Amino acid sequence: MSSRFFVRRTRSARPANHLCKQRAHYERLSQAQNMSMAPKLLLLTAARFTSVQEILAEVNRRNLFVQLADGLAMSMGTVSKALEQLEDELIVGRNAEIRLLQADILLEQLQQNYEPPDTPRCNARNC
Image (spheres, rainbow, N blue to C red):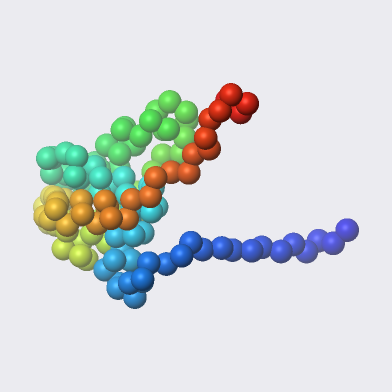
């Protein structure tokens, strides 16, 4: 028996404008479910947060998988990376507080790049 194995990686088709650096940030934010939770929280709440830890705690408090199913909580690095990307695009401001500057642009990009989760259909045989 061989101790070697083969790994095949596949990618979904890239959008026509994949060269646009700005678009790539938004696509990563919306496609990576965890990464999109912090921006979505900023859209949902009118609150201004004083630290990344505050945002992390609120995201984990709202995450049902963490609360009900003992799922993995989001990490500080994930929230920080998402905020950095938004700050680079001037969508989030980080001074004494973390606040959303351009909600309309963030919402538009999240809507454009939203992909519904893959869920199997339920019928009489497999439910």
